[in-house]
Amino acid sequence: EEETFAFEEYGFSIPYRILFEYFIVDQYLNDLIDAYENNNFTQNVIIVGHSLGGGLAKILGKYKSKQALSLSGPGMNTFHSLWKYEGTSEYFDLTSIDIVPDLDLVPRVDISGGTVFRLLCLNTTLNCHSKELSLCESMIMCRNPNAREYCRNMAKISDKDYEMLFNATEFDV
Image (cartoon, rainbow, N blue to C red; front, side, top):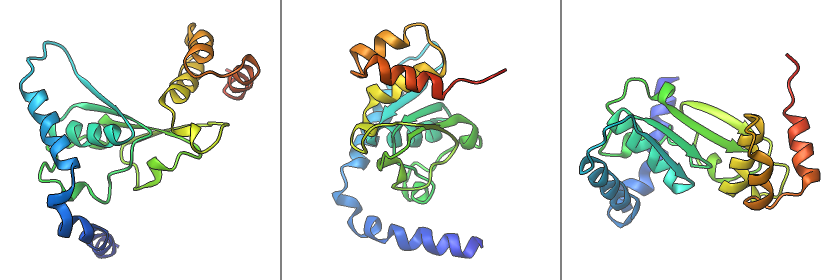
C-alpha cells in the first residue's frame, strides 16, 4: 500500500515538478515565512487562512510547528512532500484543522490532513465557499451568543435559514 501511495504522490506531482518555477504559490509561501520570521510574537500563534490561504496556513503551520486553521482550504496530504519547507512538526495531524463545508469544491482538491470539521452548508456550491457563511455556521454550532446577528449581517442569511441551521445542529445531552 505504501508503494501505491508513493506512486500516486509522484504521479500527481509531475505537473508541479515540471512547472514549479512558474507557480506563484511558492512566492506566497516565501513571503509568509519571511513575515513570520520577522515578527516577534510574544504569545501563542494560530495561523489561519481561507481558500488558498488555508492551504498555505497548513504548510506554514507544519513548517513552524504551529496550530493552523484552514477554512475551505485545499487538502495537502498528497502534495505536502513537494514543498522544500517539508514540515518539522511531528504533530501535524493534531495541530492542523480543516473546516470543510459540504458542496465546497476547493477542500476536495486533495485529501485533508489533520482534524476535519464538516459544515452542512445548505446553500449552493459557490456560496458554500464563502468564509462568512462558514463562520456563521461555525458560530451557530458553537452556540455563540452573537451568531444570529453575525449571520444576518455578514452571511446575509434569513432568520428562517438561521433557525434551520440552529435546529440541525441541536444536540440532546
